[in-house]
Image: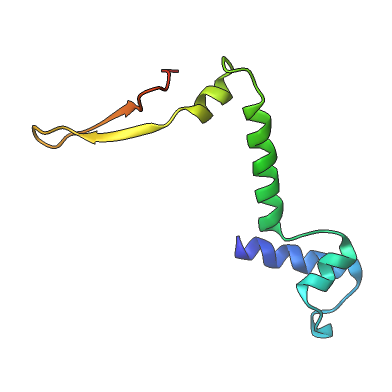
Length: 92
């Protein structure tokens, strides 16, 4: 993510017309462009998507996958790891 952030800030500097030697902070560059950091943008989009999926009907596959969680248990005989759904969750 750091390399993407560097590329993003370099592109914003070019758009605004600043040079790397002008010594402006990323905050001032983001304010002038009306943008935010890539990490913040990804977090916002993820939350928007999660809200979209949570508003879906429960019979839709994305909602079922989001509601589903896998619990790992170790068998007593031989220690073989088994995957199963937690109680209260439906099979997909």
